[in-house]
Length: 314
Image (tube, rainbow, N blue to C red; front, top):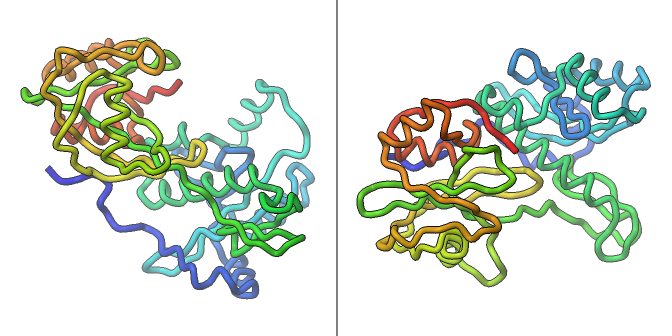
């Protein structure tokens, strides 16, 4: 079986273009623009709804949105068509109910809602845009001097307007692990914040001075009580909720009988054969992670086929 998420990028990020403001302005004028509003993305019928520069100008003139920021996302590798994100907010405050209604009317959806229906290129653009949006919104001030910062390098950095220091987005590394026993069963765990019946693979953040393999062993032991060996890399996935990259592994255990949840992050664990997982997912007693997630891809890689069941989030 092949490793997961090994296909080449669907976007040329064209980092050499980020330093030239005139070039970025020219590219903006003919770009496919992804409209991001407070964490939601403009969409239509389950696909991204790209805007033109004139569309964005009209929305700015409408008075509904704040000025916003432009982020250069790259170019299509073949056509060289440029892609940008326009990241903005509503000028008026809305209740949750109003926001849901307005978002539905304008085709604005979260990446979690859209992820299962997007193409590879659309997913890559969306992950990039939301990751940049989350980081820029969380870092308006300089961590060195406390002065204001502004978008720099087409969104790839922020520049302090006081001391001139440049700051780049941080990505938090996390491991995610598919645990197998010698009978080729897999172990899945349930978190208390998930819907009843939702089980998934085990994950945790890398700590300072720790290798990925050490993190796998520690997190698995902490959350499930089993020791693992034969740790092998499967692939990775950006996960901008808010700023992670998931590094996927599989590992084997020789003591499956001691598996148990830690009672806090994991409240229950279950071993599954392929037949058991298919039966439980088919009758709805098992809810698997969403199709856009690397966890789902890891499970389906082991299963050897697509698993039944829809999207489940918190």
